[in-house]
Image (cartoon, rainbow, N blue to C red; front, side, top):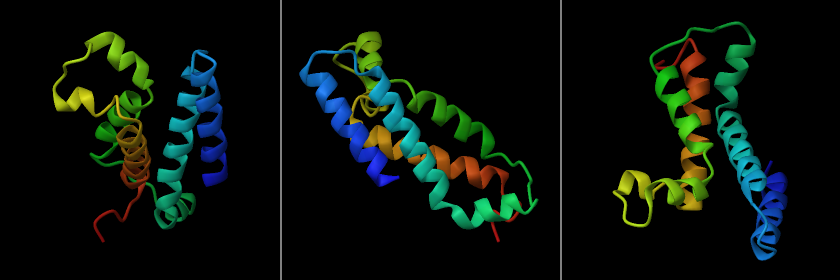
Length: 118
């Protein structure tokens, strides 16, 4: 997973150097971070695969956060300009956006796990 993220990072750097549209590498990087977040919860994922599924309230924030995090950071600048409140500014920073995308993967797995609080 980290190998794929590294290759996508270099693909993104090449696209930025050549002034291409880097939307595809940004989406791939978000996808890898989302899958990395899912794999962090491997124990809960194994529990879900065994049929212990119960959807709880974490599902809604997980889906909302995933949708917001999959929007490439270039669009946040186009839509909101330069001066933004922190909750818009955090989606322009690549590191924070990747962390939030991994968090959305973690929350999604936890939202389906039957034993969330145990």
